[in-house]
Image (cartoon, rainbow, N blue to C red; front, top):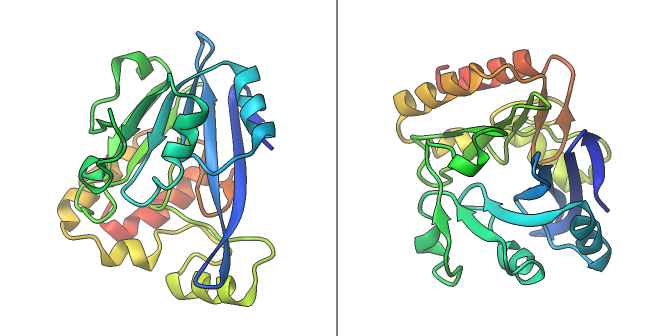
Length: 226
């Protein structure tokens, strides 16, 4: 079910298996001042969560924030067919079945600008992640760029988290560092992210970081030259 993090900010997690490894992913939901909902990185949800979303407001936008987090966009769109679809650069070519998908970039959509700021993490074309700053809650919303695998993990997940450098602490995983093709471009994007005054970080995998969040992100993004 959806869990409230702060005023007008919610999340939901869903566990699943990849190559026999138990992992989880997070969906983030922001309600704008006009009552419309912005749904980031949708997970597969049941009727209970669909009803929760409908009760919070109008689902107006569904966002696939990078080229990897798109599996359940169509599932969410079927539940809320009037919502506009947005996706990371390159996703439209990868998912031509997502009719009407609008491509994100460095410039925040005008209807979001009062609530959000955004940066396209350049230099990483394999994932092309776009990250956001929710102004009202001082929250950085990331997906795969920043990860922190905490809490109970099965042995495969714990081994993977250690191997990628994100077990028990916030960092840019080695997998993301390895697909960085233009370090200067990635560093410039990272510096833009660090200009935001965020005090909380929401990641898809799998922690929400609220202690020394900005300093933790600064240490992590130093991996990219920020």
